[in-house]
Amino acid sequence: MEQETQRQKKIGGVLQQDLADVLQKAATDGGLRGVIISVSKVSVTTDLSIAKVYLSIFPNKEASELVKGIRSNTPLIRHELAQRTKNQLRRMPNLEFFIDDSLEYIEGIEKSLKREDNPIKDQDTLDKRKKS
Image 1 (cartoon, helix red, strand yellow):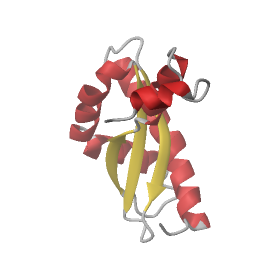
Image 2 (cartoon, helix red, strand yellow):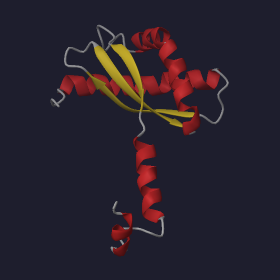
Image 3 (tube, one colour):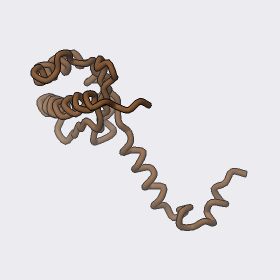
Image 4 (spheres, helix red, strand yellow):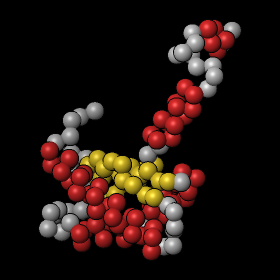
């Protein structure tokens, strides 16, 4: 994977901050109470034409439905972002939204480690877990 340039990082940071505001405001205005949408990462391609937006949504059971809704409203979101960043960006990149499931992954690891048969603390459990 290539290293991001300073310009890519700067644009990603600007988009991340503004997107978080836009999405949270849209969720609140849309009547979604108790839903937190955070933009965990925005990575911009080298030609600055596409921005991949990774979203963390809490509670997680609503995530896939919300991302579908966000994807269907991408032109409106892109327009709102263009208005906010018109003094910083000449062209607004196309937006692609993805669910950031890294928190779910970490949670799964923590649950595994909290079980009684923790292979890190008790090496004997490794023999039990090996497939015969």
